[in-house]
Amino acid sequence: MRVIELVKNGPPEGAFKISERALPAPGPDEVKIRVKAFGINFADVLARLGFYPDTPPLPAILGYEVVGHVTEVGANVKDLKRGDHVLAGTRFGGYADEILTQSFAAVKIPDEMNDAEAVALPVNGITAYHCLAEAVKIRKGDRVLVHAAAGGVGSIAVQLAKYLGAEVYGTCGSDDKIPVLKSLGVDYAINYNKQDYVKEIRKLTKGKKLDVILDSLAGPNIPKEMRILRAGGRLVVFGVASIMGARGKNILKLLWIWFRAKRFMAFDLLKASKSVIGVNMLRLSEQRPELMAEEMKELMELYKKGVFKPLVKHTFKFDQISEAHKLLESRKSIGKIVVTTD
Image 1 (cartoon, rainbow, N blue to C red):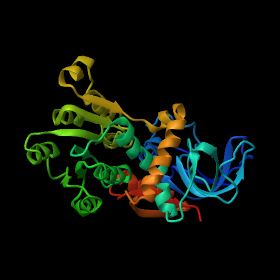
Image 2 (image 1 turned 90 degrees about the horizontal axis):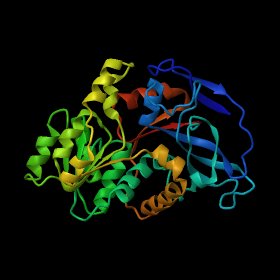
Image 3 (image 1 turned 90 degrees about the vertical axis):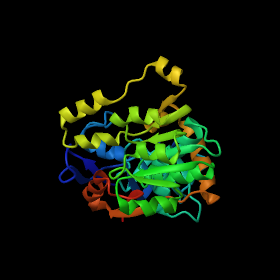
Image 4 (image 1 turned 135 degrees about the vertical axis):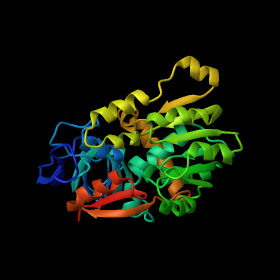
């Protein structure tokens, strides 16, 4: 099989190498998938830069999500068969034209879903769904802020939040993404590079504050966000995009972000009646795979009902992996970034 190996940490250029590796037969509970496309995620960028502690030793094969066709099944696998068109989650190993994964991590794709849309679900889609359906309970009329609302997770989160009846505030980093946010259903779109989003939200809500914040940035903005949550409000942290200011392994920048980040005392949260919830999908997939499988089925049903549509604007070829990483790291991408193996 062809694989893309991460051979050294640093900039995209020179970090990857296309190689050949042998893939064994599937174990009793595994399936082998001929991969047609895989996705790029922010965790991959962190891994390339050397900031992601779960990354396997180099040379490593990154990647958490693929779409393709089942070519072999293990002895215990009953619900999938050779030829099935599936999306699947992986614990690394996705940057390849063939993979092995646990059968519970693979889900059949409906005829109306294309490969690029399918790739957006095992990480981005399930993250958005878990944040809104499991980590918090959205009520009709809740005011919800989604950071990076034009991104892979954010674009799906906006659509799900609107379906649940929320009033959605979305941030982005450029004016050309504002129409994208509006098309997704964002009620109030804010360019955080031109406006102080905290002041803007205070004005838009007439001081009534927010019920939920989905934060993929983390870092020094958290104290401000806690101040615009009302009693009973929940801050859900599922990413650390603010670390991108430390690209190139600038350790001083990393330390600055770390020490500026808010630390919470239980009494402070009790006094304000606010919650901070951390979501790490890798930990959840390791320790609660049955929950992930259940949520993926529920998410797929919502797709079939037309509740949301994954946003895919960028597709790259297998040998363009460096360009794909460069785009995601620039934070100029819109929606999901997909790499095809053909």
